[in-house]
Length: 434
Image (cartoon, rainbow, N blue to C red; front, side):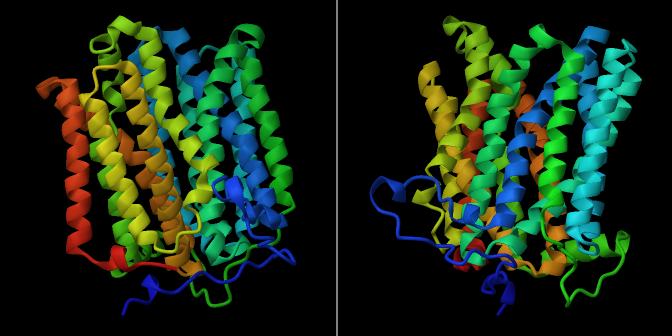
């Protein structure tokens, strides 16, 4: 029997004398599960996420805005996105291997410092009026490289800070904050740009990252586990991570579940066309804003009521059910002619996505050994970043060939069929529980 399908994560290194507290009654059973916040080390890591979730979105809005102001071309905005994606993918894979060989706290300090320095440099070039797209793209590539190194270490550290039965709750807390940042960050950036300008927006992000550095500095040491045998981070170690995934079916299936949901069921590339055609009577600008905001808002709502699912022990079935619910919701969105019904379906998809993120993340942390968690999180980062971008190409092509509504609905139904087929064909995910 594959031990990865039944072995829980080790106990957290820093615990509270009574981490579970009294039993939750009444409405509190449905609200967000905050047990991990009783653990000081996790609370520090989570608090740093609150700051960066909003701050990072300020830069995410400022960079394309500045590039468009300089060039007047959306194509250059797209090229900049690619310039950030490639180093992020490469350094996430390498960063996962690095996270398995060094003290993860030190790696977080170095990478967060690098991200902060690039934010300061963004401010310098904007304040000086340099107006160079090349400089912007180089800085963006550097920042995304640091992010690729940072993300695996941050996510892999969670299993060292909370016990196995709180991993789902910890992932829900972190995911809710990140999704809230996706909603609040762009809105805040849009409100601040006319008031303080682009340079100060970059500077605000840099200041926020200093707060993050202080929170990470106060974490306990997170050296490699005593059983770890890897002492370097090269191509061989990265390849060993992929081999480890291939040998542990539940890990492979968790990645495949996300690929199925995102590649075939993320229709954001068609939002502009749907806003301009199907929902034009509501106002194109209003429709476009609601379509882009609906999924993150649904995800935030799912996180706020994570007490309804975070204590579930059958993590495999939770992933399967969430991906199927995502597919059904996306299909419903594709068939909707009413904007408000479409937004409701997308919000439901956001709730399903939150549940899927929570339990896929918990599986990666609990089913992998500590000496492999960094590499698993590196692959996770690549899948999460790459899946929606592949979906943009697929849905854009399908939308042009069959029409946007048919492409969206067909993609959602394909997600349901593929996920149910995968679950039926390979029982490892169905059987996984903590």
